[in-house]
Image (cartoon, each protein chain N blue to C red):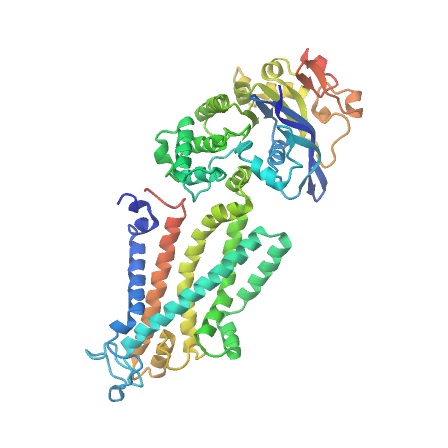
Length: 282
Length: 324
């Protein structure tokens, strides 16, 4: 137990904010993974007699305009949100990490070229770029992921580059070089562990953004194909039938809020714990 | 006696917007095996450039214009990169000035100390044992537990001990100490100096000790080199240099040492004038503008090395007069 107290998880367990974040995220993951087991109804089944049904024991969060069970669709939406979120964050994170370290380590011209590239990408408003790309690509989750990756890897790249640059001339890196460490050793043993802290914090903070972009694209009708129970699509249905089914807005919006809160708290807690200087009393 | 380190006519300059800044000009320093040699000089005299050159860690805009750096007979300016990498850490290692920044903040002490031994084909447990032994040697209490500690959990003095343990771990032939006590309290300073002496005796390495603090040099070193504006101006045994300095700069430096003050003064003594512009160094003697003894010859010709006693020389036309 005493050793566990010093691990990252052990330290997070004593931070109320982190506990809250982990509970929210764990609940989300469980709901997404076991969606088929938890769901009281088939999420595609249309109960024509129960269209626009208010929340009841039968339909916990009511039904939509086609009589589909909102709660079951919400669970399925969590699955989509997590899939898109994790895939996009991992892909853009890895691209950003690699490009950022190349920019940080490479010659000045390469650094400038990559920075220009990052800034160009970041200059586009996400939704505008998403609409443009969606017009060129077939509608589907892949398109959503591509859009998100293109709009977000530049941010990782910038953070990793800055971090690498400041580390490159740090005294302990000089010390390592003076001790005979090879280039690869310095990059993987000394720079990378120092970069990963801020990187994971950014990833945790970025995940809800990604999920929101997916929801936004689905809301605008350029995201998931029609009929797919994305939270954004649910929100859109609720918006279209706001008089009949106001609960749909809650069903689409509340999970988005919870996910954002959960991952933002996690990011905050990670930052407190991963920065050795902020880390207090063991 | 052979020299562990022999720097010959080393010149290094930096490319700057106003031209080449000649940070080191024909510097020669010898560190005999098993001896501690101190390099002293004020800020801007080229101490850091010297270390950069010795470790081949000069910044990108610096270039070695000439000279050689022989470590046990091998010119580290000309060995292939692989060989240089093999020599670093094993044949020479370094203790930096600020122990707060010279350790990797996200790796445990043990991990960093095992990492240094990456060339050794021995089990990890053995590497940990060696690391703990070395930590015990540098006087850290409870070395086994310290292996699991993170740098931020240790005080400055403890960190500097760890840094010394790391530098000494591979039993190098030459240990370069870059003002290792400057960032520490005065009481710790004495302890670290004693520790360096002990380590030197135990592993028999030579130490090149860089400092701007005359007292520390006097306490620790066998020989000393005085640097001014990128040149070595005087070299000799520590007692000889302190008792009979043969260069006007050395004499002034010793006069200005606050440790020598016997009475209360309102202003600390200083050498009037400032460092010459190193992008366009004056002809003749580099120190002549600030020197009381400067004569015509000082403006015309660069002073040769004048031996005042065997093993004690000064780059001054008036060396004999100064030391008399």
